[in-house]
Amino acid sequence: MSVSQSDVKYIAGLAKLKFEDSEIDSLTEQLNSILFYIDKLNQLDTSDVEPLSYPVEIELNMRDDILKASVSRKEALSNAPDSNDEYFKVPKVIG
Amino acid sequence: MLPYKSHNEKITLLKNGSLDLVENVKYFLSEIEKRKSLNCFLEIFSDDVIQNAEIISEKIKTGKAGKLAGMVIAVKDLLSIKGKRMTCGSKFLENFYPIYTATCVQRLLNEDAIIIGKTNLDEFAMGSSNENSAYGIVRNPVNEAYVPGGSSGGSAAAVAAFQCDVAIGTDTGGSIRQPAAFCGVYGLKPTYGRVSRYGLTSFASSFDTIGAFARTTYDVAALMEVISGYDEMDSTSVKYDVDNYSEDIKSFKKFRIGVTSSLIHEAYSPEIKSKWIATIEKLKLLGHEIVYIDLPHSEYSIAAYYILTTAEASSNLARFDGARYAKRSNESKDLSEMYINSRSEGFGAEVKRRIMLGTYVLSSGYYDAYYLKAQKVRRIIKNDFDKCFKQVDAIIIPTTPTPPFKIGEKTENPLEMYLSDIFTTTANLAGIPGISIPVGHSENGLPIGIQLLADQFNESTLLQLSRQLEMYNYL
Image (tube, rainbow over all chains, first blue to last red; front, side, top):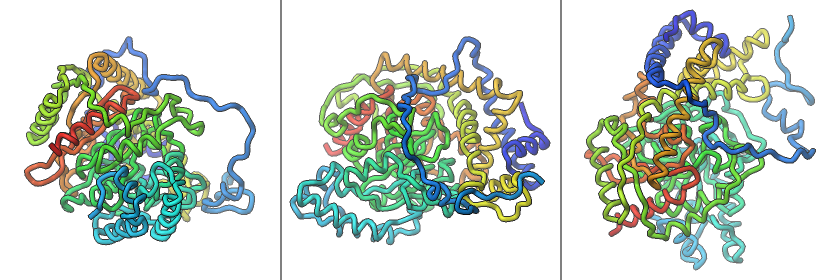
């Protein structure tokens, strides 16, 4: 499979990224060379194979559901680019 | 010059008073200063380390010090330390101060280790040469025209250049083993889930592991023993007991070692091939049994690896939106623009490329063809290893297809860079541990590493074999 420049622009939109037109050119070329290489997986018949999502297949360790203190509001806001004493501030969401 | 090789010797010298910890720490600081051009460190805790050295010296005198007392450790800047800037090698995080400390770092501190600073890396650990850091490339200490490997290039180079005792790195597809090989030090990537990932900035969550760089096997063992083990803050960390690695390595147990011709044609450098064969011969002389095995699907590892890790990365890096932390672009009229501008200004080219590939393989209509297919191939590759480890205790393969390459040599061609991970990604796909062992130099005097792989949770086997090969070199 391969991607066109308009595919790449569409994917950029999904990924919330923007590129200059010249970047789109080289990105399309690079992605296509990677996708061409990746196509070799189709040489393998995987029809009877279960997908593997985590390599160590044991049950996940769950914590007991006990209420305890976590991050304070002050700490949570300490790296915010913009905030007041209580909230993260962002540009207007609804026009 | 350091008057000790590994931490057991250092502790003895510290206890009998013939080594002063404050002077020792100052020595490392001066080595960092002397070779600033290597660019190993993004942050140096100059004041803290002197103060901590004084406190720990007192503890040693009163016999209250922990197992790693006075061990001077550099930490890859992908792991958080409360209140210390963490950049992940990205411009996006140039002013980010974590509010908690990674579990593995806390465990080092609990044993009275001294953290000397944070090391340089490829941005968000994406790279094989340390040329993708927003804070400049790292140079190979053996020859500064060459790359140190990546993504934990700063950690590997700092250990090789005697800028610390040992270092912590992370390995998602070879990011500990490859730079260890390129810099001529030991580098261990543990089993997936062996070390808690709490406080590690996620790249590909089902691949990421935390491990160690050192100049001796003993130091790798001592470090791994402390950072391994279950942590309730990481649900994928495993409850199995941690072996006593530093004791285990004293044994001269004989193992069955698998040799495979699969992939070996990928070692296009004859120098790598000859070191690989020489190491197999050494293992034979040490009394180990060599068994021929097959890993028939290894050639598919890079393709499966880049689909799965970019998919996971695109999802993990969605959290960098400029809203709650990280650098926000100032020029945005609305929320959507804020996301797009912040991400486009914050991420570097390689990170964007991987987010794009990952978004594509997960997008509607392509999920089955790419992501699901790759997960199935991941199972096939793991099954190959499961089968092999019924016959052998360890497998020996090269760490890298070539000796270190020159700075700038592969930056123009991402696929070629990806292919340099051919021998390392399989371990992350299968979740098994691997160690890179320094075995000598190329004709140009550049380090070469050979890799041993073992079944899940058999780090002890790798460390025992590594120690035996290390001893052999002293014979």
